[in-house]
Length: 198
Image (cartoon, rainbow, N blue to C red; front, side, top):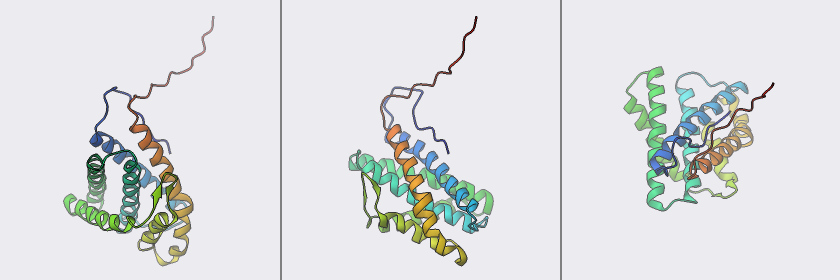
């Protein structure tokens, strides 16, 4: 999956809220990709409640990862602005998609996600995340949460799918994206190589 993670339009330093908006878009794409990969790996994830429960758990995990990454480089107040903006943007995107597919009000879906995020944030807070990425228990907790989502026949295989495949790939993409978006210099557009003949 290709992710655009550089600014091209302005040399102005971006606000934490602007960066959070861009990260929210990337997190949505990474979460959606993890869902598609898991379904391709022959895990049954039915369209409807199970589908959005999977997305909810994976998006919550990614928000926790993003918050730990910015912890290294932002003061507490700025980090709070970043993470709260990020959480709200991701919640809105999920709620809009859920509302279109399942009905009910978008605000209800958004609140459900925020409630789950707040619950899980306290739980993920117990686990280590350092410069090498999430500790074993951090990633294992994602797998544990996913066991609540999956059908019984898939539960035993879900831990390996999350810990060996989906989580490491997602963390790598998110680490790179956030690092690139926090760079103050905008990326240079790529020039197309052309052959010139007589």
